[in-house]
Amino acid sequence: MELPGGLLRDGRLRRDYLFKTVTGEIERALAESGLNTRTLPEQVTRVLSCTLSEVAGFAVDEALCRSLSAGDRQFLVLQLEALIDASPRWITAVCAGCGEQLQFQIVPGSLPMKPAGEGYPEREISLSIGEVSLRVPNGGDEEFVSTLDSGSRFPLSELLFRLLRSQEQPVEVDRLNDADLEALDQVLDDMSPQAGVAASIECPHCNLQQEAAIDPYAWIVRETASLDLDIHNLAFHYHWSEKDILQLPRARRERYLQLIDRSLGKYRADDLVQGLQGGAW
Image (tube, rainbow, N blue to C red; front, side, top):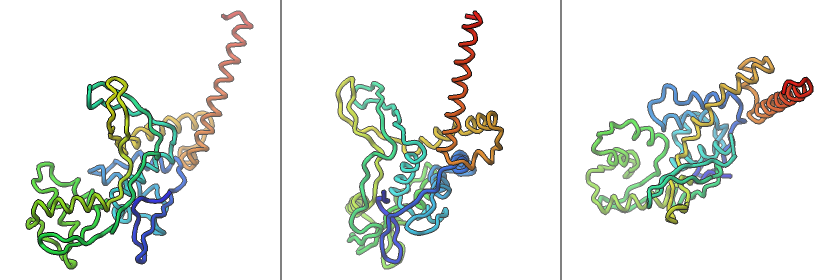
């Protein structure tokens, strides 16, 4: 699996990436990724920086995660979900036609993605003000936009000021006309990689075929909520420290939890047999 976009390294676009082995320590970092972050894009940067081992041959830190395109960041979050737990997910949506609630399943990491288009990550375009260079939005841009006041009158202008350059100089975005904005929107749509964040579904009530949006970040809270319970069970039955438990790969931790459940099931069965033999039932 490769990034739909990628990073330039020595003039060559590279799409390779590698996640760290998922241990309890990684899951704890995920659970605490929202602490002391103001916005979701900042949390995504933190999540990726603590779970990725390398991208395009680069060692990973928060600065690198900010430099990834918005599409690559969404893609990586979805692939991380599949790495942690690939079992099907139930999603609830409201039909756009009849308003009824409906449920459907998706398999994490399975939704189709749109790869980067021609010129990615930066492309020349002719506008009414002349030739400009337009790059795709990255994590740093997402963080910037997310910190703008909700009442900001010109969020698009402030974003374009970051994305556009003319001969390495900022562009006067207030000089752009409607045709320029439409052209920029089309080029960005063509050039930007896009992760799959919608599923095509049919309503069982009215048979309307529609696209249901999927929140690529909702799983982060859901998957980390049970970590403390896992630690409690393993510490109680095996008398291990929290540090030792968190260092276990997730697969091994789940295996030990299965053994505990199996043992408890055997003990319950033995108690039932003894009760029957003793006439307790």
